[in-house]
Image (cartoon, rainbow, N blue to C red):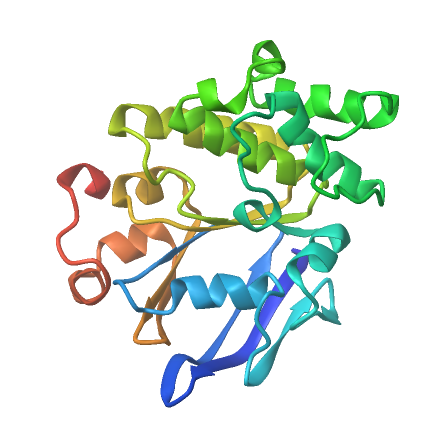
Length: 257
């Protein structure tokens, strides 16, 4: 039997009179790479905020590993095994790559960051940093300041810091945004290989690039106006003109295989 990691149960989230999510339900199982798609204002970011413990739904709930976690908070939930990369760290330009990746390692060890550079004397955490950096191909950049990194490298450092927490499930909001088209495949391949190497069992990503979704996702969840309108494998998704028109409009020819 395939193990279920995350369950969204009839999630509804309102901002005043505006309903951002309306009764959204789905499961995420071990081994999936799930892409969340939809037009602007569909509720994608609100969904990720709710799944990651940042928002409390007005109705419904979130279960992770069979336990209710709605509203628990992103940091507490990350320590339980569900991490969201850009919620955990901000890239500090004067910090080195090693220092930035250390944030997650020290959080996992129960040590507070306190706006100070992590100590270089904690050997176990530093070993974890080197291991994670190697998984992302960043081992040669550990002493490089973040201001000298490319946008793609900054994305990888952000995600790498989250992965030092050793999550089972990772939530990513547009991991390739701001990256040149030529680098997107490299970033995705590096991310997926690193996640597998570090024990991440499933990924959920908000993504707009349909070619990447067709190439890497195992499942597509589509939102429009806060409602779930699609939940299907990528091949079925890209063969359904009505769903494509509703959620993303015209799809690049390459995404159709």
